[in-house]
Amino acid sequence: MSSMASTRQPPPTAPPELSSSSGRSATEARSLKVHSEAERRRRERINGHLATLRRMVPDANQMDKATLLGSVVNQVKYLKRKATETTTRAPTPIPPEANEITVQCYTAAGEDKTTHIRATVSCDDRPGLFTGLAGAFRGLSLRVLRAELASLGGRAHHVFLLCKEDGDVSPGPIALEGAVWQALAEVAFPEMAFGGNSWSKRQRILYSV
Image 1 (cartoon, rainbow, N blue to C red):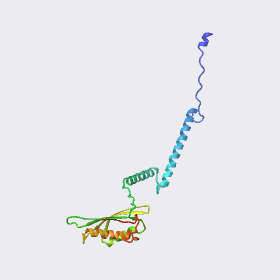
Image 2 (tube, rainbow, N blue to C red):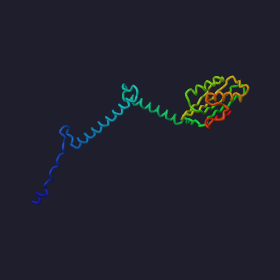
Image 3 (cartoon, rainbow, N blue to C red):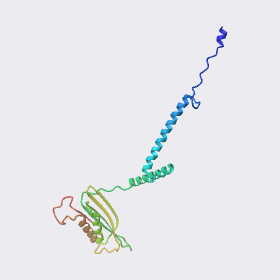
Image 4 (tube, one colour):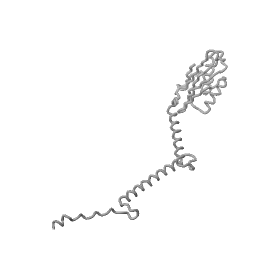
């Protein structure tokens, strides 16, 4: 009796549960379904982002995916370059509160008789101001080589580099500076009567040559 009990074999293990369609186990089938669902959602997200890019990029409806992505890369590089240029550019100066005109003449030595003039104007901003200042320069036969303009809070600050190419500064550079100052003042401050005693602090013009 004891001999028969010692030779009894354990019951056979049940075979893994098989799916009805492919012969895979139920666990494998569930894992495959989860993976397929995750892949479907990933493709939907990619297609959604591509559709957004097509709306943002001009004429992108006829582009394939590779061309579309290449166009977006080029656009991002362009924007990055423009952002770098903007951050490295010198900040725009804030116009001062005081009304001011400065004029300085520089005449080259040697055979080059070109006279350069640096003029600055700080005043209340208004339409036609720049046009009036440019007309004042033309009236004195001066050519504008460079102009820097700043406007903020109703105030304007202009910096001009001018030249008088014929080299004729008679009766002298000081007289030319005075003529430029007077012409600019007549444009920048037309409401003021020169020589009056009732100007406010802002109205008082600083004369510098």
